[in-house]
Image 1 (cartoon, rainbow, N blue to C red):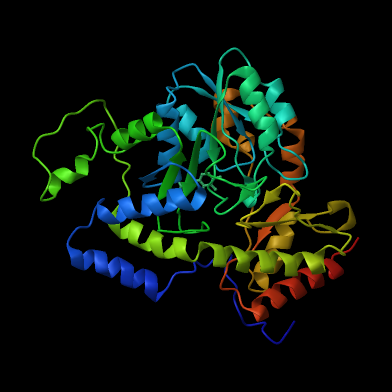
Image 2: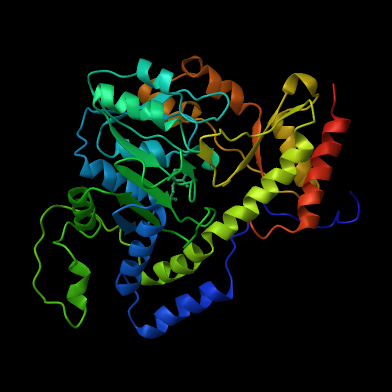
Length: 389
Ligand SMILES: *Cc1c(COP(=O)(O)O)cnc(C)c1O
């Protein structure tokens, strides 16, 4: 424990380097800085990587979710099912339409949306469901597809955590009608900021391509290029959500090493779980047999009744030893906005509320060294030993 005491292990560190820097520099030197050929190339390679017909590059996953909801024609007064254990982006996009995010409790094993609780909350106004593949493990998509069929719901996957991941052998991105990915700085593929929406539906793809660039007719960006014309038509009041060629050039490098980075994270998860599974005061994350996880997060749970410390105290102790941790997520029903606007309270979400008190996320990034992994394991175990009840 003492040999590397002075080291600081951040919660996350992006696996980016000279190749990404070179790719970005090449774009800058080309003189074409916004959306153009690199973005088209990134979209095509991304689509084929996940096995979707279309991929639409956007400047965030939040933007992608917004465009997806616009593309399905979400309206004021509609309701959309969203798990409470997620980042606010998954639900705020529903609020953009003056529609209602109907929060849903989670499955205690996977911490993903609970399809049984989702069904209980369906009303005549429910139009869609946004499953979030929490930590990188796909949701119970058979049950969600079944719900969608029986109640005529559209499915928009929030895949911010789950590149690459798969369900029954099908990659996330090719499962549902619409899937939104995030390339934010901490995500499994990063362009700093960025995102992608995949779909097999050409009409939805076209609508999103138009709306991501001011509602201007297709390929509007070309008007700045040699082959483009000065003429364009505004077809709707759209948004400014396009992905730039600088971001896409970085994304192309990241996509090439996406599988390698996943293998590195999975290895860390295995090493963690091998040691932690035998600790009675811990519950380690599991992956269902029908799923492959991207291992975006390693979420550990404390069996609090065996310990004299809380989850927050655990995080503080780890921080004191130079280990960065985080919490995913503070459930949405506990935030002032969702409580005050929709009247949600803790007893509406017993599982999410209970699990929130005991989970935290450990560092799991591809460039973690063996020394760092060992240091995290030793310190978690050591703190538990001195905190046994
Ligand atoms: C990060 C995240 C988002 C938002 O992604 P951005 O690209 O930052 O917009 C959405 N949903 C979940 C679950 C996330 O973790």
